[in-house]
Length: 400
Image (cartoon, rainbow, N blue to C red):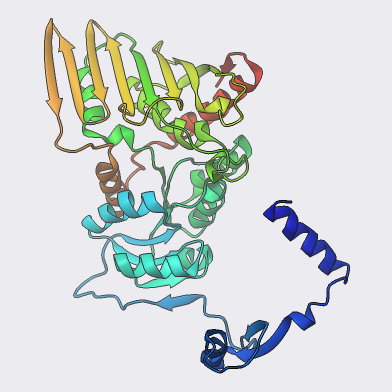
């Protein structure tokens, strides 16, 4: 017997009418008289009890939006007025602070629970928290929707926001499969709002420096990208094929997009192989070697490895071309090799590009300009992740 099987057995017995559930409830209290219920539980009222039910008035209208604070405007409305759907740890630590720095007006927020929506809304100064995505999208004053929910909802929320004439910034991945991506692209092609996905590595200072370092070359590049990713449990929603889609789709897109940015090209063919283990906790797709061919003749190799030690640095990028080498170590340090000389650059803090990325999104909304990453590039990166998973399944190279 497990907890799940106990619950399943209980539900089956209840459905068959074999349990006397009525006798389990000894008291009922209106929510307005909830204090009396807790006095009973605490023993203050000295009355025997078994099960206590709190009842709520069903005739009361459900509030779908709660005002947290009124807009504090002294002049015209800010150029960027944001609504947010979802707000996990990454959004709260890496996105919201940067949007705040850029003077964005925080309009409304909806998360998986009302408690977290209100807590995050009050912490960051949102004007209201909402019961669902529709209330956020339908706000007439909002012009940017930020989507930071679980992966399986990204494409749908992005389509709905674009249909509502909003600009959209959706955390990676853009979609979970080709059908979702095709539908989203069809919407984005005709929508007045722009679509942007959170491929932040290309906005990092060291990625910008690397591209500048190779800008005058006419020869292809060879890129080796190693990621010490660490394990994520099989029980994590990220590993769930429906909600998360696995780590290639959920995180591998970052590394492919950076290679696209550095080469100025796109992936045309992939070949991937994962490890094989008898240990049930080891997930084959979490430790893979991926070879990529690009349209300009460049090639790339991604070693995405989950079996390392967390004390070892997470990311290292080595870029070779035209007799030059540029190395990025964990987006904290870069080393450039040219004409027999070594030049080392160190940052005070790790910078994977989130601040520059958010700044670019805000500029897109303010000016009405193009997305910081072209729709064709977003498409190429996303499709490459799908083809990598196909290669892992078939054991064959796959054209993108």
